[in-house]
Length: 139
Image (cartoon, rainbow, N blue to C red; front, side, top):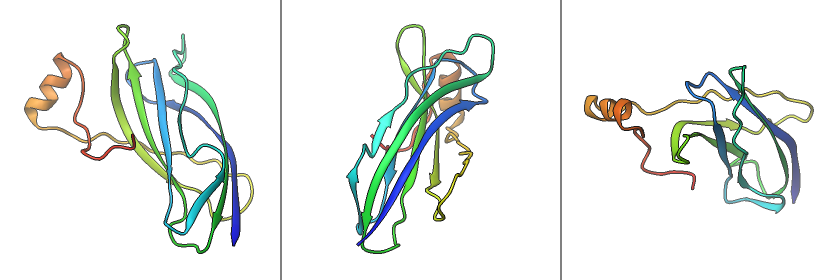
């Protein structure tokens, strides 16, 4: 049985229209994989940057996997959320990135996206808040 160690961090996010963002993450892997140690899902703290458009999280990741094969190599599923002044959470975007298959130091930029709703849904988003979401979530 082979083992894989993933040690790193979710550094932060940029390019979002509001501050007060946080990230929910989860590792998805195939049936031949299992987590020996570490949390395979979690959430960063909310960062409210004062004068820069970058949210800094520096959320640690430390996972130890065991596997019987290479199929189903682990990947991270990410959701970026915004919390408003009333404590309501709004999903901003989804993203995913594969765990690198080669050893060493890697810096990975994860591009995120949001599903586009119908005209009515987009108008509701502008006036009421919330946004179109996928039916299957990482929660």
